Length: 205
Image (cartoon, rainbow, N blue to C red; front, side, top):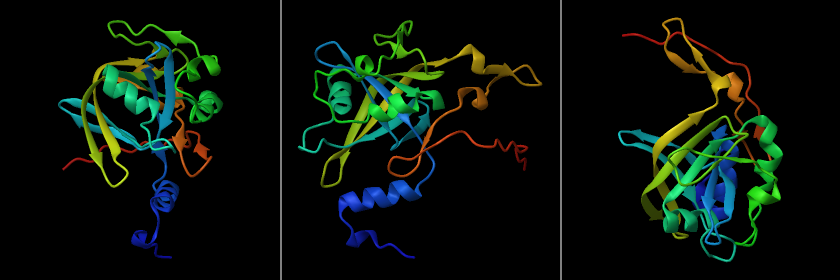
């Protein structure tokens, strides 16, 4: 089957791409609302894009009424955000937080999520997540007819839960991915758990 994207609407393209570009990591993004409450929402158009400077990229669209999504607006207005890598046990809260709610409704409170201090950073993190990136707004680029925002954030600090930190045979720090048990995104309403780990030797020239 060949799918000609030029014949599809933007919504059809989205559903086609998100069902074929799999699995995708999920950025569970915490920002501060104008009311000082906290917003949290998942985004799977997301990844690391640079090491110098250390940048993450989020691709965030608009609400159904054409206004900016709360996460997008909060980042551009307040310049700080926290990206979490959620574990399987948080899938229901993560999925629920994708709903489009009024601006003054906090998903953090609605889902009874516990916050923890992120030392040296103005925002807290979700305590149940074993990985969190404290990010400062770096740059935004708007693309396409619907003005999709590519938001780049510079990572200032990374939190990794002690339970996921081990040492390799040479005494170097290594993050145990199985301990994190990260969620990944598939198609509409579909998530994947961490599957069988395939560990291969690193190729040499």
